[in-house]
Each structure stands twice: as C-alpha cells, then as structure tokens.
Length: 149
Image (cartoon, rainbow, N blue to C red; front, side, top):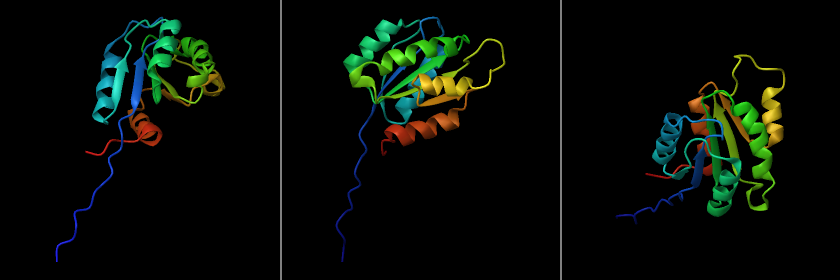
C-alpha cells in the first residue's frame, strides 16, 4: 500500500537589509553578505556604501525588514554603530527588528572593557567581530530561519 506523499512546509523568505555606515566606502563586504544571505534563501536589499543614517532609517521604514545587517571594514563601525542603533530603535515599526553589526569595528586593534556591551545596550541584538561568519549564519538561521530547498 502506498502512503500519501508527505508535504513539507516551506519556510518563507525573510527580508534583510544590508548596509554600511555613513563613513564606510567599502562594498566587497556588502556583496559578500548579500550573496550569503541570498544563498540562505532570503530577499536582500543592499543599500551600499556610505549610507547616511537618515537614508537607512527611511529605507528600513519603507521595507520593514526582518533583519538589518550593518557591516564595517574601515574600523569606524563601533562609533558609527553607537549612533545608528538608537536611531533605528526609536522608530516604532523598527523597535523589534533584528539588528546586527559586524566587521572591523575599531581602528586601534584594542577594545576597551565593555565595548560589546555598549553596542548591545545601544540597540544591537548581536555584535560579530573578527569575521565570525559561522556565528553569523547561525544567528540568521535562528532569527529569520532558513528557506527549505
């Protein structure tokens, strides 16, 4: 006797915004993240390099993403991120949106005590330093899921 085919529910694609900070002109990191997140099955809106905070807030308000990924290569991500996260969190429709930052977040090679906690307190859900891509993939899978193939 043949059994009925089992249907496996498909996860839905999440909307993810990828952006740099206003001071960061690098793009290769953004393209890498876009391709990685798309490979995980999600829709990505890559805002590009040198994104002013007002533009990032406006685009996130318009797109209502499930996750916002901020990437920095120039080392100013820490300072820029501390200013950016509270602005995104202040928007009622974005207060619960996933928000992460990663890349090269400082310029001096050292971290003061509590730097990561300051980023979390500012509004980031996670801070990915030193290219911890495995932890980033796990976070994306946990936060917005993975689309079944």
